[in-house]
Length: 281
Ligand code: FBP
Image (cartoon, rainbow, N blue to C red; front, side, top):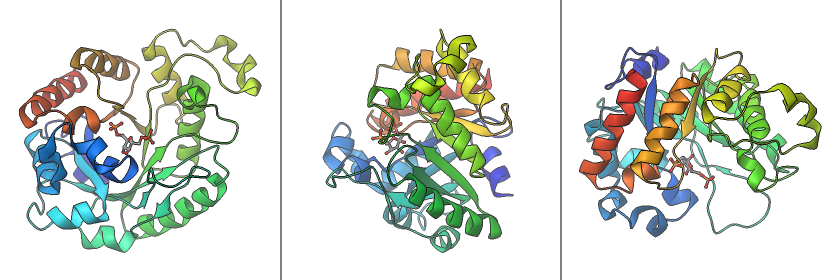
């Protein structure tokens, strides 16, 4: 029922595709780095309103932001509570702290929880155990789990974080963890793991469309819902080209943070409308 609430909402409602606004960058990257390009975005109410005005499928954010706006905007947009968070002040192996609970998500009327795991990190086994426990509890209470599967650390090189073999591996692991929705970065051509080189000799990966197809293949042959992140702010034409290829490769949608809230409200709504247009075909 909660997945249906998400898939039936907004301008993409009923198409099986989705576009989500994620705003946890204030936590992950710092507030000024995230919001100074468009200062109204410091206000959580502005972010709720942006997701509503753009007719998006859902808004995903950490606990404090959702608490700030969920009374004013109750019922106007499906919510995903990000239940773990990193920050840019900490050093050490890639890891996140659990910063909210499944019961918080229920209290705020969310459709699901969002959780980041870092496959590769020395903390990845502990993160997977946290995810397993939170997923079990979320499912038992009728909530879905959205897994941000972002490889980093361990055997993964910095440039390899978005190599095709690594992104596809991360999506596959999230599927195996029972994620309702999987979120990965758009994959670049190339293989990062020596052990995967031979297997990739016959995987087509020249275009982003080919690479998205492979990520979908690794997500239970396209049977899992996979969405792709927007990344750093980029010009609208490059973003739309990228999203055209995600759509052509069978991706289910996008989760676009900085490329939406770092633009002015009207520019963001216009750009998101074009993105929605691509997913509508
Ligand atoms: P963007 O569209 O801004 O890239 O947001 C997607 C996202 O997953 C955010 O939810 C998160 O804060 C950020 O990217 C994390 O990116 P990274 O871990 O690479 O800094």
